[in-house]
Each structure stands twice: as structure tokens, then as C-alpha cells.
Length: 505
Image 1 (tube, one colour):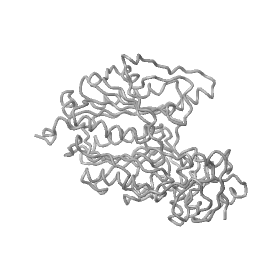
Image 2: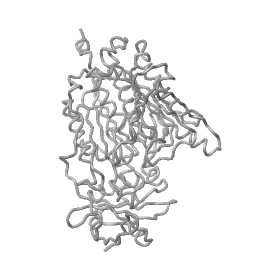
Image 3: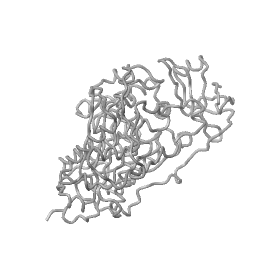
Image 4: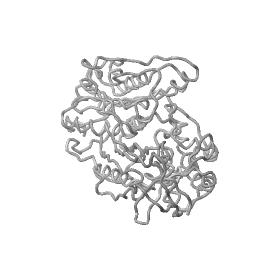
């Protein structure tokens, strides 16, 4: 008798993982790639009759259907889960289209594991993909693609969960924080202030960290950009703002898909999926932080730390028990905040990614974490004693999910486990609507066409309230491009449409 014989039938297990990448442009739609990844996940699981046993298909929301993103000009499926189902011969009772956020794949895994433990689902396929490289290549070449698929909504109902909650303030948006890159630069600059680094020193530190990720991508057969980059090459790439170069940020021009098969142990037994293929969920948690302006310490996310602590507590493990790690890596601070909290080195001496990270493996929209999880499942298949940690992030270090996985059976009752954390216990700063003065907590100089055009500050009043303001005055922008000190006093005046303009005091 093995340990697997005693595992209860309602225990959720990951049994298959699949990934696909097209490095050259084709005409394939994103759901074509998602379906191929799903086929590979089913084949990886083994067993018999798996497609017919799927009762739920959940597809990660496409970038083209996410807030602030231009719709795809070549059409889309009006029921992405059913597009995958039709391609693989499945007939799910439930079709789910997720929300916006890089946390989504792991957050849905947490949700469906609970449902399986409660007997509400049995076999769940999670899938997602992006074909942004194909779209852009066709647009540049003047070619027309037809990615339209339609389904009868009465016969094939879709649970479309929409965009989800907002994770920014209107004051932030009104003052030039329009792209995630600007927000994350504020976090990285706050880290530079906390460590006493100049902007130039921070760029070098970020590049050294990211170079080790590129080496992992170069060895990954599913990477979109398999190339080892030195720290100098990363720093010297074209500048996107005062901190980031083009090689420091997530790259969304990819053709990538990934899928996972999650089921109950009872279903795995009935379908003949070999027990050595089962990967158990040992620790899982998720939570949503305050907006960046409201966070007590903008250089970190206290919610991310709570999520990690809770996942480790459920698993009854520490970081010393983890041999496989993938830390979400959309921007440098996403890696460094988590690694430093866990006591992990940033010099590349211990791998912090299983894929190679979003700047080098590829950033397939909201679906990157599906690739992280697929890598973890595939690698655990050959390492029966190993444990894997996967972290995922949505928004501006806003939405967090973490999971710990192993082939060893878990004793956690996922039907009862408390995995969702609230933020009420976290400290928060009030947002000041009409400040007249303050001091700089962090800043970013936004570029256009390779040139600095606008400075945006996250600032604090003497009373501890927070606000965001901006300036496009050339002399001030130039000065801030060179160097700014933490705590620099500023004056503020109100402008049109909710904007606040600042000057150095």
C-alpha cells in the first residue's frame, strides 16, 4: 500500500500541464494556442476519456478584453471556454471567463480546488493564451485575420466575470499614472530611496537581478525570447522612463498558451490517471492590497507578505523546504520585494524563476502564472520529494496569490481552509484631494519618444496623508531626470480635470 491509497477521493490534485509557443508569426488565434496547450495538458495527465469528463473550463481573460487595452481588430470568440471545448471535444457544464490580473490563473486554481473538495466540481481545465505577436505582425503587414467564433448563448451560457475591481485612484490617473510601468517605477524608486541608492545604482541592481532571469529563459523551450542578456545589455537598452529600459519590463508581444488539468483524486482514479502524476496543493492564499497611494510603505506590499505567510502556514513549511521557485516578475520590484521578504538572494545564486520571467520568457497578458504553474507541475513530476512555490500578481502589486505544491499528499482540507485574506488589518494612508504642499515619497519621470516629458510624484503631507501630482515644466523634468532626494519639499496647485501640478520648494 502506498501513501496515495489513503488519500480521500475529494482531494484536489493537478494532474497535467501543457504549454505552447510560436516564435514566428502565424495566423493562429489565441484560442487556437489555448486549445493546443489544453491538448498537451490532457496528454501529460495520461488516463482515458479525460476530455469527456471535464465539467468546467476556465479561460484567462485576454488582454484585448481587459481595461485600457485596444480591442483586437480581427475579432474574437464570444465564448473562449467553449472555443477550447470545441477544439478538444469537451462538453463542460460550466464555462468561465476570468477577470483582469496576473493573479487570475492561481486565484482560479484556489477557487476550483475548494469547489472540488466540496464536491461541487470534479474535473476542471484551466487554459489561456495570447497571440499578440500574430496580431501585430498582421497589422504591420496589412493582412486581415478572422478570429471570430460565435456560440448560442442559450445553449452555451458563459459566466463572464468582467474586469474585476479597480486598483488605482482617479487622482493617480489624472496625474499621469496611465501605464503599469509608471506605477512600478514608483515602487522601484521607493526601494532605491530605502536602500540609499541613486537612480543609476538602482538601474544596475535591477539589471543584475534580471540578467539571471534571462539565463533561465534562454534554457526554456517554451520561452518567447530565449536569449541570455548581461546586466550591461539590460541597462543600455532604450530608456522607457528614468529607471526602466526596454529590457526590464514584461514583453507582451508573444504567441504563448498554457493549460492545467485539476481534478479530484476520485476522478483521477476513475480516469486511470497514474498516481505518480498527481501534484498536491499544500499551501494556498490570496488577497488584495490597498492602492499604491494608500500603502503605508510604497516600497513593499504588506498584503503580499501576509499571503506568503498564510500559504506557508497552511503547508506547514518554510522557504528552506522549497526547491523550485517562480516569483512573479512583471517588473524588477515584483521580484525583489518577494525575494527579500523570503530571505532569498538577488545575485542569481539561487534561481527565482522556473520560466525566465515576463521580460524574457514572455508576458502573455494575464496568463503568465499559468505557465509558472505548468512549469512547476512538469518539474515536480520528476522530483517526488520536491516542493514548489509559485507567486502571482495582478494590478500594481495589488492582487496577490501564492501556492505551494508537491507530489507528496497534503493533509489540508481545501473545502474548509481559509485562503482569502482581508486588508482591514493593514495600515493605510488617507488620500488628500487638495494638498498645497508636501514632500516626495517617490517619483517617476515618464518618457515619450525616448525623451523625458513629465515628472510624477507620490508625496506626503505633514499630517501623513498622501497624494499624486505632476509637472511637465522642462527645467523641473530635466532636474528630476538627474536626481531627486527622498523628502524633497514641493508646492502644489490645483489644475484642470483633477490634476495637481507641483514645483520644487
